[in-house]
Image (cartoon, rainbow, N blue to C red):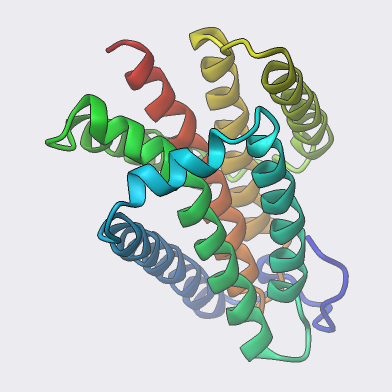
Length: 235
């Protein structure tokens, strides 16, 4: 939870109606974010010669993907800062929208590859279905147990740092990361879903539904990325 918010009251300290309203807003924003991502991805895919353009740019140098990854990480930090703005709702929405756009761009090469393998979109549908099922199951666990999973924060951050390091080494070394790495990252994404949902229940302030939806969307996107990689590796 970002400490820049002026509201000192967490949702957990409010009445049932306020908590319910906050949760509804958060998940409606999450649903809207997923829909916006799909629309943006469809728009990018409809650009003439997009496949040749994307792979032409990425193929110019072995370090091209590192540049994309670095830009995504920097943009993500900026988007998160905007979404956690305590004084401007417009800035919060700008952060969420910017993050959705970043995800649409960084997903584009992998979605193009998935469509090359299965032009009917079968891989995307299967990965999306598994992602939705896992997200729903983890969300149900967090809400039914009402356990505070904030203790996962430090471990998850360390796991992501290690994961990024492995990705950088694989890009520089020119080797593929196998299905085991994707499975481990799915576990990390699942941990982030539990962590984010727990924050919604226990730690977010009543005016933080935009930031909360961004946190959940980021976790869902991470999970979908590696679930899709697993399906693609089996083709």
